[in-house]
Length: 357
Ligand code: CP3
Image 1 (tube, helix red, strand yellow):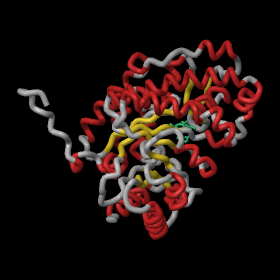
Image 2 (cartoon, helix red, strand yellow):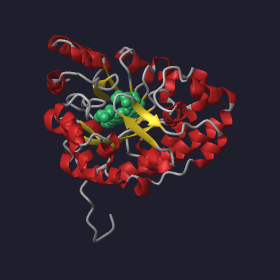
Image 3 (tube, protein in one colour):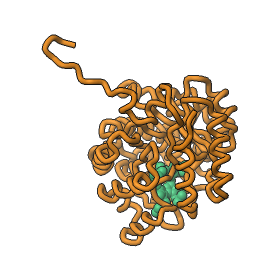
Image 4 (cartoon, protein in one colour):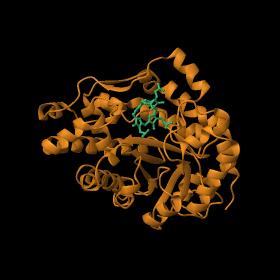
């Protein structure tokens, strides 16, 4: 400290959100808990907003609505992480890729990409110019949540974003993106590089505006064989992590891929701080395979939330026991499914928050 200046008091560990302390490997009394897709879908209060504002784009691009929906689960369940209500596709509007999210159908890309000429038309993403509502919403969320939980941002991973824009929407066999990958790999690589530069910048923007940890969703990377994951996903994820760590070394990065059991060790090679496991992986195996430096997140089967309170309790305890003490964020193995009874979600949080190591 320079003479005459007063050092800023460092937040004590106790004043920091439990989720951040757990990722940093501090001694925590229980695992922090939040649920993927906790905002939206199954909540009655969300459906009420949907009646008034039927357009997903409006709900996810209007600051007041984004804040209100993000806070709905926070107000009822008090999770340890409050995720921004948005979508992995939201940045596409700022990259000259028109899209919509249609009720009952999911994402729709109006002009799916299949050529080099189309990739050339994809523009650089400037978050503050294209999605200012995201930064504004995160800033408000930080004030509202006030370090009682961690505010979480998120982005889609390059391969997963590419799968939507090439397939034109959700896909079963991923045949269009595989045709591109295996017949014109250079075209796909240049698209992946554009998403990589853009998403690294988007993570930095989210952190600068209040996100305390950011989850990267590579939901469909596991459609790739390991050798192709190493070609079409891993280098880009690594590049994102390296870029963000240069400017934001303290920002925890979480990586989720669904059905990732075959790829766990490779997911760790990206350099992320947290790997989020789906429920097909035994948590104790996952922990062992990822090693002591990585925090594990997950991984209760979202389907368990349709079951009895006893089963929900049992599966939470099983997961927590297998994860071991510390460096574990309790979560589901994928997003909450539509139709999940809210009282079961309440039970999940009650049991989870009552755990003591
Ligand atoms: O609570 C939260 O987790 C935050 C909100 C959030 C949404 N999408 C809102 C949403 C998050 C984190 C996402 C991420 C997302 N979006 C992913 C990665 C996570 C995963 O599930 O693997 C993916 C692949 C998408 C793309 C997407 N968006 C699809 C496939 C769909 C339609 C299918 C579906 O599940 O409903 C969406 C629409 C969407 N995004 C909804 C919500 C709440 C449902 C539509 C609506 O409520 O109107």
